[in-house]
Length: 266
Image (tube, one colour):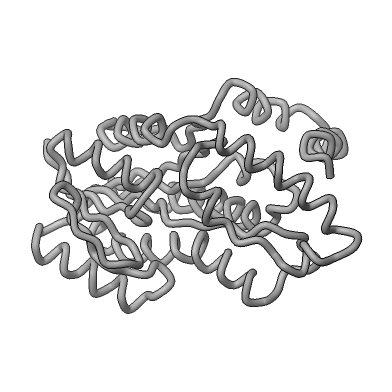
């Protein structure tokens, strides 16, 4: 059955790959992104997920066109690298505002329509970084940890209205995310943190650039869109990263921190 789907952060990477795949399957896909775009398969709408008024207007316009919203995929996100101690208020607000509050804003905009219809699906993009705190990506991890808790609670609150809420936890993928990461200049310039951060960043970027292709995640999201009862959470990563999630559940906190420090040479 054709579904009306909204995907945020749809101009590139996961969002674009997922939108194109779902459109090829016959679904009507609206892609939200900050810049103006045109495409023959995805119906793009210019929208900043931090702007609640803009979101409300765009969602209302889609409902006016289609009569409903069946699926929301909260994919919009960005990353800021650097030491937690040196993060500026502006950097923290941008990271949390885009990744976490952007997800909250979109959910609050579509839920009244889904609740009235007594059906719908919401798929939030978390991360392996939402399962374990990654050094020098601390506020990125914090934003994804927040999505994890929000998604679990939301799933419990709205399931009785026929709305299924899930999250996907990607590992390293080769997308434009790496090139668009904003790095803290204060961290780069700091005599203590700077050398360690550069060393860790080299490892992070190497893993991301050698990661899976976004089409792998797109296929997983498409499956969840079409499942009657999608899982609450799904890890999509290489075997090593899947194992790290399992290991996190059995090791002590200090042991896991030791592994992360060793891996990222921090």
